[in-house]
Amino acid sequence: PFQCDLSGLWRNELDSLMEIDKVNDAGEFSGKYLTAVTATSNCIRSSPLKGAQHDTTQRSQPTFGFTVNWEKFSNSTTVFVGQCFISDKGKETLKTMWLLREEVGSPGDGWRATRVGTNVFTRKRNLEP
Ligand code: BTN
Image (cartoon, rainbow, N blue to C red; front, side, top):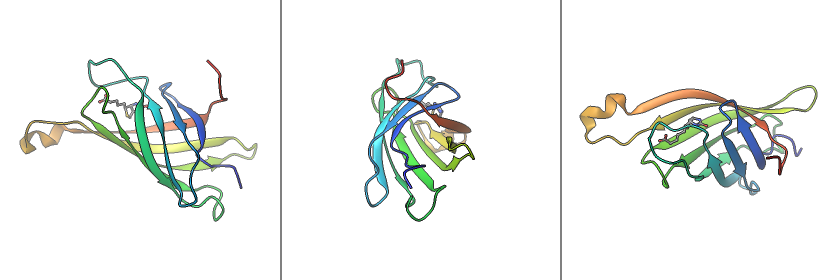
């Protein structure tokens, strides 16, 4: 029942890190995201995230979504949606897709404002460097 609870420390294939606090009874959670890459030329800062996960007592491989506000170094916003999967050996994997919206000056520039991609996260042991 505790598996695929999003709480804890996660790393994706880009080496980005996220730490998610305890998921509350409504499935809501918050945390911090430290991206390893940026589309800006600014210095990367840890950024707040907020999301919601389906009830892990009802299902073992729940879907979830969260938003990262890169407010400290970028005007952009990213949303992730995904699902947590558990292997036969009990290893948890978060399979996600994301949309990154960049701020542009006018609606006419909207055509180039959104990037899309996938990220796979695995659980990282706490306090590892
Ligand atoms: C920006 O460059 O404007 C903010 C940082 C965006 C980082 C993106 S979000 C999707 C992808 N997955 C990551 O871990 N980092 C990049």
